[in-house]
Length: 248
Image (cartoon, rainbow, N blue to C red):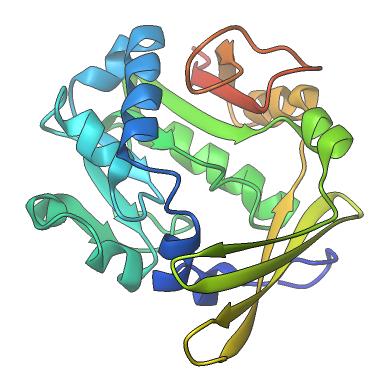
């Protein structure tokens, strides 16, 4: 995936059991709060087939299925899917979001929780939004949970260290071109074994996100700034959670 600095397929190697361990604070309670907010803003997510895209272990999907039994999930990671509650497994698919096994016009909604957008090149990110638009049925909604780029730039922590589930995590964050890069060294306290992993996300300002949506035939009809709800504030909101629908 050449042509843009920091763009490689890092996500193929990273989303595994170590990832689940060090992000364990992102739990079912947070997911339930986020899903409740989403259903209030966009009731269409509560009925009909809704795809939780990049669903990971299924924490948002579990919360959503309590309201919508037709919701299902897709993720690339075998490890994360394997960690899902056994009751969710009939509703889980494995695949790449750039090649979704869904027919056009079939989905009432698509949810992308916890920043699974921006991994790819600009061209691939645009193509993904256009593909998601095509999958929507009339009245369908896309929920796009993304970083607030301004807030991240102003509050970026260059380095930190913490311990999670017996793993020491040393993180270094840099802004490189139009991407935020997080490089981590993971050390298992019990054995001393180490590994290096990277996360790389394209930073889009809110206006750029709206332009991307418009270019894909989508319009942003609501913007929320946190999982607890509340209007998006460019200076204060930690997240940009956009609700999109087809332009007719």
